[in-house]
Image (cartoon, rainbow, N blue to C red; front, side, top):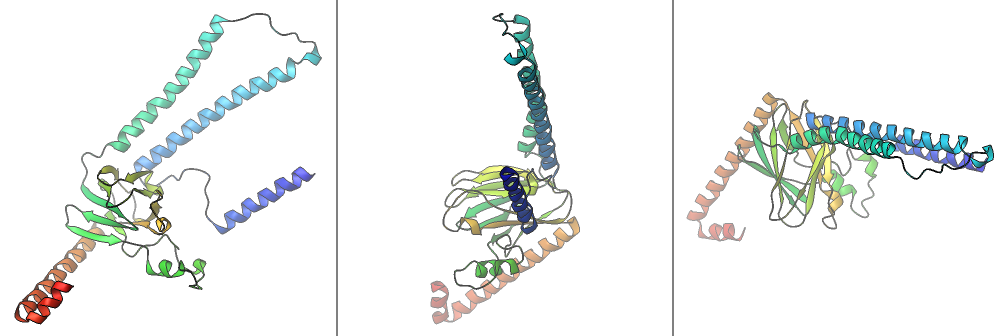
Length: 289
């Protein structure tokens, strides 16, 4: 009875945890073709392992129950069986082959970044991300949003539960178009980071002095959240990743807005430099800034 009470208590704790947070015991299906293929591969190998376990433990339990000493069974006297050894060598080989072929296909597809529609460079910093759109000329930093940043401070007296997407929201998300193959070039400016969005089905380390790459093609618009998964310093837990997938038309509008902001900033900077050229005192202030 004590064991049953302990089991019921464990189940109750598990149910309570699920009521408080959205924990999952399995891989997420994801929103990309590769993430779904990785999930299907995972389930295929899982059920193969389950089948092997059922057969092996079934034979073991049957042997224990029906060949025990109390039933008068005596141990076998043979030393080896060549046919049996051939069978239990061939069967595992075929099982491994059935797992290796689909796994290799998925791995090759996951690493194939050729024929991309656009490229985005991701640079990790302590403790934020920099996104550079190589074709559009857009460049910005993405850091933890202000609400989460205030709530995480000691003595803030802000209930984290009152903050939407606490520690999983940013000030400037990475914006991408749907149904486009996007090559992600990943590196770091200081220490090793790791760029990970679960719904994309993969993660890549951001290593100083090296560029790794991956690709993503999101099927439907939405907001997808991730985190740095490499311990990179004291604020490692405060550099989330937010990717906003937009329709092609919405993405073009966003690009136009970012381009307009960039041009306006360039005009303002040019005006300041022109004014500074007239006013030497202001010129000195500009140089200081």
